[in-house]
Figure 1: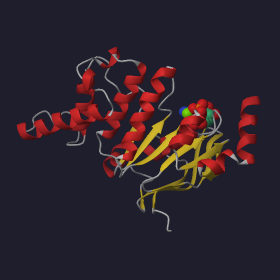
Figure 2: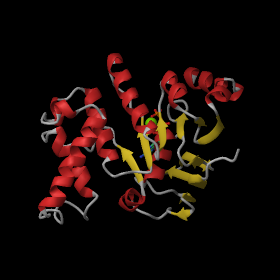
Figure 3: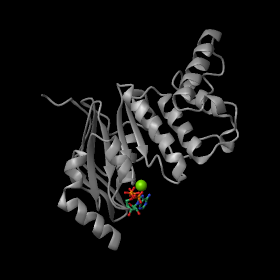
Length: 256
Ligand SMILES: Nc1ncnc2c1ncn2[C@@H]1O[C@H](COP(=O)(O)OP(=O)(O)OP(=O)(O)O)[C@@H](O)[C@H]1O
Ligand SMILES: [Mg+2]
């Protein structure tokens, strides 16, 4: 059986902050259609790597390829249009706008260069935008809360809203940084179900950074472990839990 083709690849990726090397010579391959988790102790470089993939940060060295095409110098927006979308941790929500308005703005951002250009759009496409917005809210389980301002939503619901906004860009690759972070225990199953459902509809590749191992093991097809900016191990969930180096890195991380 042949493996699916690589969709997202990095070669020798390095990111320094001053003299500190946060991401160190990373060669990562994400295959089309896989659920790939990125784990590792605090400070391992996971978020920095995700930022390099999304275009939030530029690498100090190395190259990034998407579908075989080099995207190293591409901006965040160029990458989003190619199909790489990122869910942001609350930072991109408009707190006073309704859940619906938040998602609608994300849907509209796909149609033009920005809000100004979309100031006037034909009624027919306006209806399509409304319809797509509502479908996205339904997909993440927020349809009943569409008219509530984002700030009135629970933390868990705000994370679902972010997810809907990321999905509004019709991504091929969805990048998630700790989707359950800061969530009340009872909210975790809800967001998990949403992520699982979104993935199972197909055509989506997910790269997720997450600390909760139960979640990682449940959702992932492949797992990459980072430690001190480097890739330590990669494999299936079963391979990773049995890996001695991984166990040592975690113990070292906890005691260090
Ligand atoms: N903008 C920055 N300026 C300076 N140092 C940074 C910056 N961003 C990250 N770092 C450092 O790079 C290292 C990796 O950070 P990163 O946030 O990528 O880790 P992480 O694996 O996501 O950790 P966590 O699990 O705690 O979220 C850390 O030591 C961090 O302090
Ligand atoms: Mg992080």
